[in-house]
Each structure stands twice: as structure tokens, then as C-alpha cells.
Length: 315
Image (cartoon, rainbow, N blue to C red):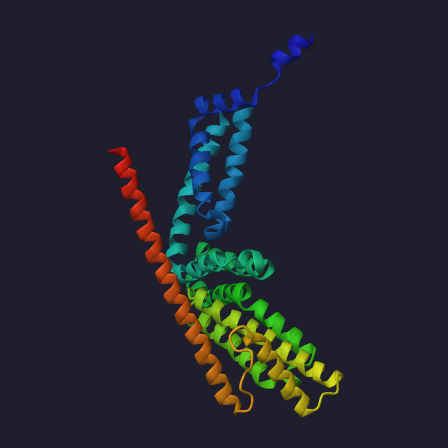
């Protein structure tokens, strides 16, 4: 009994093959429908496109029951698909600016980072393409400019989110800590860099690298502002006088330059001190560069000598 049941059970693969052989119209409808769906048929011709999918479902069910009515159902589906493709082609032509803006927004990942807003825009696009289907082309054309702007804004928001949001978050966090009260100039520089990053993207959506540079600079300036405030708090907590602050600065500078100049000339003006220390650093760097060049010459000479010895031994 078990063997009989297994033998009679339908094989999905055989059923599909059988439908393709006996009902080629159904198979053709599926092939052409799948191709059209991959090209956004339901977005560009929603009403007729939906009718096509329904007709295919009905035709396929009839074919699986070996009902010849599947042929006429599939033929109707193919006829509707031709109409749907015509509607889709017109939508692409008339709404090119909208579809281009939508594609750019998707490339910026707006459909992920701003999913609710993107889906809302798609519903509006669905409405416009439906207007073309029902013969209200002028009404659809009148609304396409505003919809293109919505997609374009989503693209810009997504690009800013990828490059500017991190800088904004760091900046706002610093403001909540009132860093801008004690380091207003540096914080203003950070704000200016954020604005420049946004303006770069507004002018050219592809200039993400340049926008990122401004955003990174804003982050650095914000961090610099925070450290300025931390240093001021250090002075205040230790109740340091102005003289003690200068002495602290000189001790820090002495520590940094100790290996080059163990006794910086603080008896001179600060500008002269900095210039002199810079001169000594430059001199050390030039000496190091000269030594490095000499080492490279010696290494090449040594390599040549070793190569000559190897050739002599080989001969």
C-alpha cells in the first residue's frame, strides 16, 4: 500500500516539466512576466501589472489540473502583459527624472537608512504611474517634479548621514557638556567644517570624499575643543595662577624637546624660543636624512661587493 501511495504522489518537478510541454503559453507567460517584474513592472504599471500576475496564477492552477482553459487564460495574460509593458515604457519615458532620482537615492542606501520615507515616496510614484494607466497623464506630469525632489532629498540625507552625522553627534555631545562656552572659537571652526561638508554634498552628491574630509576635520576640532576645556578644568582644579600656567607650559615644552635641547632658552621671548627649537628640530631631521642616505649607499656598496665575491667563487 505504501509503495502505491508513493508512486501516485505528484512530483513537483515533473508537474512543472509537464506544464512547460503541454501548456507552452503558461510557461511563456511566466518567463516574460518574471523578466518584466525584474524591471519594476508593478511599480511602473501597477494596475495592469497586477492583473498579469493574477492571470498567471489562475492559468498555472488550471494547468496543474490539466485544464485546457489554462491556454486561453495564459493568452489573456500575455495580452495584458503587452499592455503593461507599454504602460511601463511610457512611465520610464515620462518619469525619467523621477526614476533617476530614485535610483540615486537607492545607491546612497536611502531605501535602508530612510526606509519609511522611501516607501512613502514609492507610494507616491505608484500613484503617478497609475495616473498614466488611467489616462490622466497631465496630472501625473504636474506632480513628477516634486516627487523627484523628494527622492533627491532622501539621497542627500542618506549621503549626509554617511559622512556628516558622526561629526554632528560629536559636536552636539560637546555642546551638551558646554564645551562651546570655554572653547568658542575652536567649536565655531568645527561648526563651519560641518556646514562645509553639507554644502559640498548639496553642490555635488558624488563628492563624498571631500565632504568626509570636512566632517573628519570637524570631529578633530570638536575633540580639540574638549581637550582645551579639560586643560582649563585642570588649571582651575589645581588653583593655578597665571604664572603657574606659564611655568606648566614651559615644563611641558622642555619635556618634549629634552632629547634635542635639554635647556630651552626661556629667558628669550616665546616666539624666539619656538623659532630656535624649530631650527634645532629641522637640523636634526636633516642630519638624520643625511645619515639615512649614507646608510643606503653603504648597503648598496656592500651588496655589490657580495655579488662580485659570489661571481668569483662561481667562476
